[in-house]
Figure (cartoon, rainbow, N blue to C red):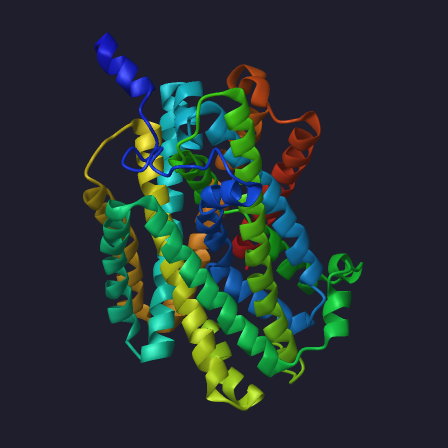
Length: 440
């Protein structure tokens, strides 16, 4: 490789077609500055509302009422801290997590990390494809096979939005989140949950530890909190902002980006807890403690709430969650490939390849085994994500704690300590979850 090519390789930008394209306000009041940074956090937040989270929250609410709300809160705080580290890494170094792995590790190690990350992207995409297909089936009665195929068209939606500007992608995602939020607000009104019980559910109880069945669901909620692709995604998309390369500008950008992701994840927490509260106030109260399947939940919610509107809103929210998640997954796929091995191919080709790798197994299982097989494939995809998690979280914590890499923006010792503990907890819980699934 020539010196010029080597220099270009080392300084390649993450998401080059969108890098530094969003202007940020350097004047005016603090709210105007904050608004210019808001957006990336919401793309990250949709990863915390995928079909796996829905199934876990529905099961937890149906079985144990409001008691696991405290676990939702704790797991979300973990996610907020880790995503803040992603923003810090991207802004301070100008490199995303994938690029930092490529820069810091020997080629064989970097190659293995890339393969694992690609497997995680495929697993993520499979989960989102399945969720979108189920949403289409529930809302429009489109067979799952056709629903899986239709999800391939959102690749072109991403391309069209990115062509007119990254802000349009952010606006699209925020619009979907607003619809999801509105759907659950209406469902909460119809369900009339016990507000006192909800408040009590946010207080941790020893029953979570002593009750094996409750502990298992709690581990599922925490273990599914941090999605590996979100760490790569966030460290890259914060660089879509045109930030000056001064200490003051970067410091301000880290602060605003952290606020953006924290606020977005707070909204994700409201939505996730709404799923559990809805399940607790309908299924658990009615004695239907074995509800975990999305289709079953959709069918049962109408007779319990006395209106078909509830079921319609449930399906709309699920469809919006699937659509928003597939958009962010395709972006993460491009970031991972370009970051780890610096392969620059046309965005449409990269996204078609990623979506094809997800569509093929999803379609095959849907045709051969139907809805039951789709559910098992969804579980298998979560196992793959669990296996990848340590290989994304641990490098993130190590990089942000490295003063040589981060310079004056190195993470404070207290933050490094907390995120290191979180990383160990998440890794341990995911290992246990995998063992439990294998042992069944």
